[in-house]
Image (cartoon, rainbow, N blue to C red; front, side):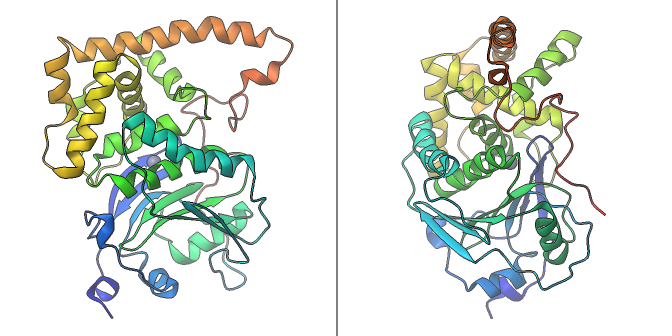
Length: 345
Ligand SMILES: [Zn+2]
């Protein structure tokens, strides 16, 4: 047995997204480039999983398993670069799968990155209870979340439960998978900021309404002081707060939508990061581009809010009120009062 499989160690928690139910854990070898990943038998992976993985997301467990629990495997659906395992049939041309596949191209075009042929393996649990019992059995150390992404030395994996929020969850976690397949050493803030950006349905230009509402509320309170350097200094073992997730999304949206120069800045940074993990961070590059990046991002978010408010009023008064409800976003819930899909027992 390889050292990777037998040597115990404590997974390092990198971050947590209360919005998406995403927690980032990593074991050693997380920084190994994708090309170095070896193929491992699934059973070896399962035994070793708590100790050697990058894990983004969460779990919840409140019911003791009543039968042996394994990963969903009855049905296998291949939609390159995705392989979907489930214990219930999933339409090969389900609109969500179409969107997830297309999202890889979206990410590549938006960020100027090449597409990776590396597959991502999605395990879809048919119910919350099944998901909870599986996680209780295999990951009792994990917090309560709806879905998660994990990166082993050999594979990019997503676990998710089929439900009202599955589209949002899969878009978020698939973004992690696509990014990790291409860019090594992605900083935590950017990893999560991009996932928050690309978790919204296509056609919305990354406008994450929950994060926007959260940041706008802080601006109105006069308490929002963006600080990209501080985000960049977050230790991989730290958990990101709600505010840090919202700020990470705001910086990503600002970089991608405030001008060609800032979008190119992010693209060049990611390209440099692929070659050099110690390349100059985004904050240093922004200081060379703008006199006051912090003021610029506050202004950018404020403009988003100014545009959003009248549009929301117009939609809510229209004849189709359902259009005012984001896909997968339950009505009557705000950004940071939303609870995880389940809670620990
Ligand atoms: Zn995430």
